Length: 276
Image (cartoon, rainbow, N blue to C red; front, side, top):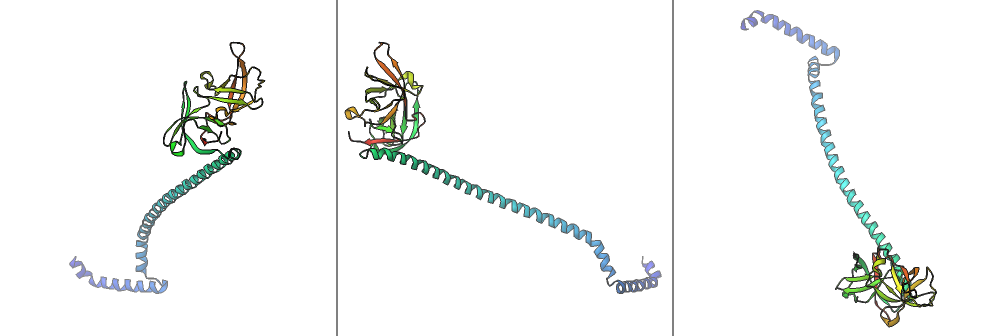
């Protein structure tokens, strides 16, 4: 190698001078440095590749960041939707309660001396032997055994049987243990309404001790009689659905359909005090 440079040194110098002159002429003609151009030609693909990779990573980062933001926004929207749904439910409950109170207001105006405790049905006990509900008020709200339970329209639902501090067990009209004095509104005849094992499954009760001369028809309204002062009078019990003659050929009984929706009712009112 040293011999090569020694023997050809002059030629190399001449070649270098010529190359430099050529580059100077090309630079003067094109206005660009050929070496710089050559370097750009070599490095541009590498720079483009590097830039592309950098842009891809930046795009992935932006996409993941945007995805996290979407998840957060989605959670916020879910929370807002849940709050709105809760507000709607509360508004609907308040509207229904307002409607119930407005209906009860008519009963209260007819009987200003009565006092009430509002309650919710918290349990049902329907078997072959009983038809009872448990409600959310008790002795703490001055509820006592023997108090009448009505719906918002003043229809009789049943009578309180047992009382706890904040609950009460109610025999509904369909319960076989139910028995109370009633009156036929149209004829003013007195009789007895009783729960019946054979009718309980049909959602009916029986009316007995009907006077022989009573002229009853289907659809007659039957109310509590109020006789004896045990229960308030005038509470709608139900309507006569059919009339039958007993086995003795003399006595008659009638099937009553309760006016209250005993089997599905959710909100009730206990008459805690009334005057005879």
